[in-house]
Length: 103
Image 1 (cartoon, rainbow, N blue to C red):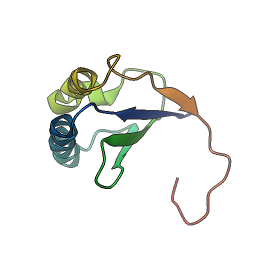
Image 2 (image 1 turned 180 degrees about the vertical axis):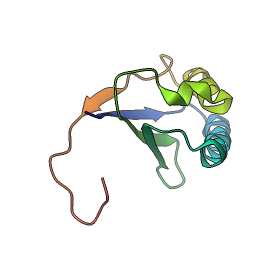
Image 3 (image 1 turned 135 degrees about the vertical axis):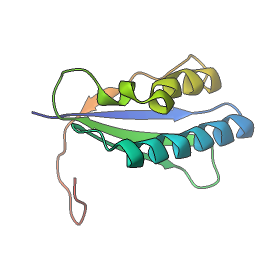
Image 4 (image 1 turned 135 degrees about the horizontal axis):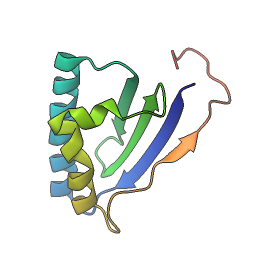
């Protein structure tokens, strides 16, 4: 059974937003190269803003494959340094309905 977690955060500065954005580019480049099993990940940035949304799906409750990728492992620390209150707490979500999305 898979688990989906939603992370929502807003960084405190435009510089922080760019740092997070650049780090995310690196994470997705690493994911494309390593293609780990058991995980799906998507990040969105509100256009022109400082707010980000992420959806992480883990196939099982075992070790998170994202933690085996250095760029991904470093991401929570970077985000936490750019957000008031530190890294945001992910919340578990369940899909109620979808149309046209492969979720």
